[in-house]
Image 1 (spheres, helix red, strand yellow):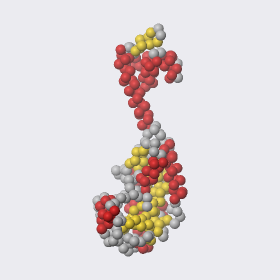
Image 2 (image 1 turned 45 degrees about the horizontal axis):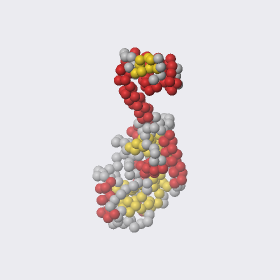
Image 3 (image 1 turned 135 degrees about the horizontal axis):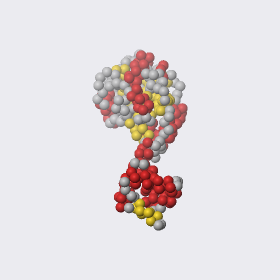
Image 4 (image 1 turned 180 degrees about the vertical axis):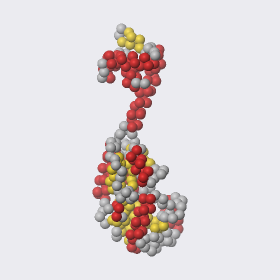
Length: 310
């Protein structure tokens, strides 16, 4: 059904005159008449009775009018759903406790009127995320891009916007519990426990870090969730794990866990935001500016990243 014909029918019904409806739609009276005539032919009914001072809806016209209004409202909803700036911005934050999620939350606090769809992909590997960006089902994602040495497929763009500095998370009985900071050299005798890692990007990064500094980083074994991990670390005299400075974890006060900065040099997990070059969503442009400005203001020289991230 021709939506413009339906729109013209509603305008004529509301005004009672073809000329008035045509003026409101920016078309000629003849054009308005042709549209309505075409709709009448399609439906095989007369919609208006012509009077000396205008027109009046027939019984069939009266029956059609509420459905025509709903059809126009549905068309408006369809347009709204796919119009950049009017649909929600869909961002993959990878995990809801880590730096990308917290940065997006901070951006939202500065722009509380925007619509956001915050997601974590069910199959969250980098290749799947980049495919979703390319297909237009995501507006942006955050990835280290280790496998491609930070290159992205044609049509996509990326910018390194997060250097998430590491902290050592230990319980109160750990030998390093009271240290104000720790060095990578000082961690060689302390195994780092990170069970359940399955994504090739972080697995590869932590392998790079372990080889560069002679660390023992154990990623073997199932993950029973963050809460179980925190409980085991709190009770252990030897278990420790890495967390990002930009991550957010909560635990009972009785755990007395310690977040200790890793320094000299400070290893960082480098993350790039990835988006489609032709994505016109205005909120995406604002978010990218926010990320880049914050990165310039907070980045430091004295950090360590693997060669592929330089």
